[in-house]
Amino acid sequence: MIQRIQSLYLLIAAVLVVLGFFLNWVVYRVGELSLALKPFGSDEGLSASTLSFLWALLLGVLVATIAQFKNRKQQMRNARFAIIAAFLALGGFALDHYWSMESLGGPEAIEMSYGIAVLIPTLCAVLSWMALKAIKKDEDLVKSVDRLR
Image (cartoon, rainbow, N blue to C red):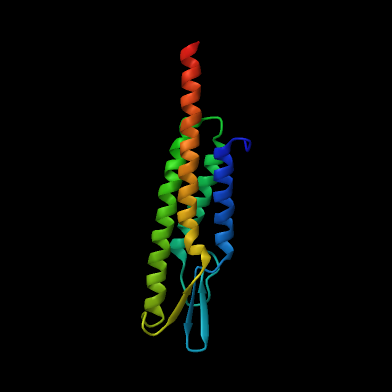
């Protein structure tokens, strides 16, 4: 299962998503008050419900894609959905970020610093795309061997 390169790509993406649960996505500073936005653990007053749901969905899709190693067609379908889910998670972050800025008084009233976790959805999409290409390569190899029989 993990000996195939696509499973390794997907496993790295899943580990990055798990890391994204614990990292701060954005830290807002309003005067002396400092609040962090992250999935399943945002500070009081900040809502990350959209990000949390989509982030959990992305993790579930990645794990399901790894588990489908015997069914390449289903694995390709799941890898495509993982790419879409990664960009949806990025959109969910943007939506929660906007709501958080509005609840804290608008972008001019606060100071923000973005964390490394903002890059994780893009990295997951790239890793899922690389896995998709590797799965397609395996599928083409199996089809060529079947033609020879």
